[in-house]
Length: 279
Image (cartoon, rainbow, N blue to C red; front, side):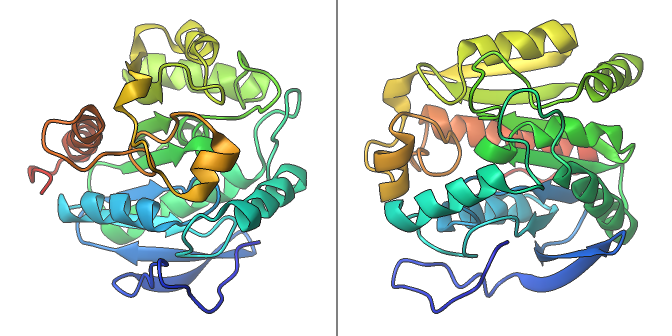
């Protein structure tokens, strides 16, 4: 689904990543890999692997981890412009790989992502694999815990299902299995959203809490902390404070969104057994 094209002035060439084709059970996808140490699978938000997503990937890498960024939709490295990104979103909503609406259960692409986690763990070793979801892929980080190697799930402003503010993008059997593994192994699920986010509401966080109990560490930032000048897609299509560590992050010392970034990286490094601090 994702494509490559001639890049614009604001795009990210991603040339400090190794671009690989990774095959899982006969299905191949492009994956951008960088870094040393235990692996983190970082799934892009809408509308794809934007410069802000790549920036977060580099922060994870610079903390002493390897990062695996799969290309799931959109144009790799593209700056999020409203018109093109809206088309990407519409296509993803009708794709067989994603279950964007209530009643669909777990998105089929999650099975491929679990396989990617297995590949990453085999290549990089360590205590396990981290999984970071963003927006459209936010809940995938939780679904991926059905892969035993995934030990550090981070659920950032999960937007699915789009038509049910209190819903979780999980089939009933998967939800029960995830809750059982979290309980049995004492996993912790870190999550972030902005107050007033219409794509990821307080009702959704309450549903996670009902499923996972105290293992769900959901943190809410004030809406006024969001970057007031995000790229056009986030201004015109998203239309509210949403992307905590990417488009709406403010890269200034002591800022709440930068603290969230540091908390996520500290969570990943601790769970995966790395002592390096974020730069």
